[in-house]
Image 1 (tube, rainbow over the protein chains, first blue to last red):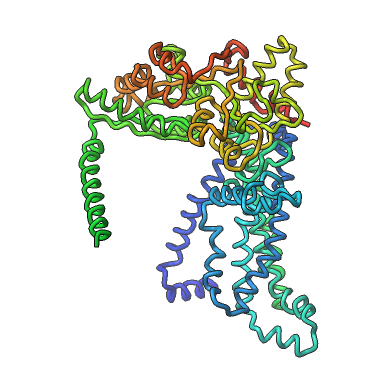
Image 2: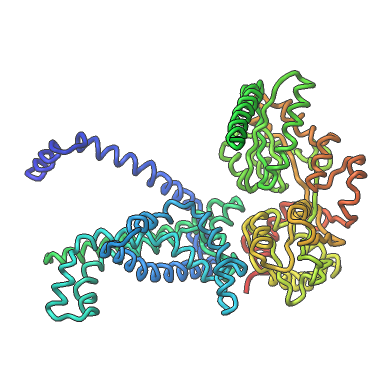
Length: 284
Length: 340
């Protein structure tokens, strides 16, 4: 009762009209944009018996594509965790000419159509491209290999890390590092024991989002992956192939695996983060 | 000063041209009739050339203005769009199977292949090779493609009709060579598929990989595409090789009866497809390096299309349905050949 009073009391001071209306609109929007497509996906799946479903999602070539996708996404996310943290650090802690430009550039992978990114990367890193030409004599091949897949995934998902770590780092005043240093911590120790614990939830969330995004990436990867069966085929391509065969149900089945993996990961991240923050604030 | 004069003049000229173009375009915008042609990906330039001629022809014979709208994309994707409700009047595809899908859904007549001449295929092509200048790997036929160190580029048969034709052509060749001995054919196909360097999802992607990325010794694609590339980039960079035996690739057309009827375009749609068989249209088609059946045009372009034995998919493999079921379906022969 008292809780309700607080809610309505608070609502009267809000900018948006009425709790009921705004929640209603939110739910309607979520239903239309998220739940409806998901329901139709699940609806497609209901046409399959469990055995059929299993046969589709456990087919050798599809399983190989999971491994390629997961491996690529893992490598991409790890690279992004390191370099995303570094970029956020540079953007927050230093003043230098062009900082705002660099800051704006961070969002480019979101703004650029992913297919354009894929084609550009393939052009750069193929054996006659600017980068590829330099790497080819060293025996390093990037375009049309597994490395290219990870590269494309890293490109499209780096803003997730930067943009989640950045605000947290902004809230962490530089005095904190200084205090740690004056209290006798080494640089490494100050980073490891003082700064990193603060950034940890944001960093893990950002990396997790980058990973999930990489799992579903199609446009950017497809142009730089060689798409060779068992070697450089990503799961999104397997879904595309099924659609191409007018096999909507098969496509939905494989899509459901990607979706389930992503959902479980996102949920786990949320739970973990909640617990972490409670612990940070001394709750039980 | 002269520079400014020039500038001003060109601005005026551009403005005038724009007004003129607008003036010409506006009656077309408000055309009496509209026709939507759902077509395959690489036919943009082709129909952009043919449509204005058809519009003139229809204007002259029916005293009515028509606007032909085009929709292009991978032909399976295009067919899927129609299944999901895109109200196209006619389809011009590069895949018999994609028209069959529409026929199965009752949108296209069951006997669509009998409604227009040559199995409802106003033009056709085959698969051919594009090799680097001077043909350094001496690639003349399918046999040369299974040598150990040859790198091949062609689109993925799983996602591209173009790639399917390549697969079928290689199989048909092997079938002829080994007299139907399936074990030997499969061995040949395994080596053939094993030499593929990159599997792009579509024909244009494969072209890019071969031309721009400089990957592979040979690109396999439609003869029309291969010739267009060689014309565009100059024959001093690439050579076209048409193998002595290859597959007949039909480009089927059909009226989407259900929607044409509803749009009141039945006659217009049929006439549009009939027009593709006229000498005028056939000449345009041949100009885009497609093979045609019109005898006069054939004679005019004889030097462009070398004589080659073209095998029909239906003769070698039975029906397209059988082909899809046996070879390209999930777990089919293609999957088996690529399994390891």
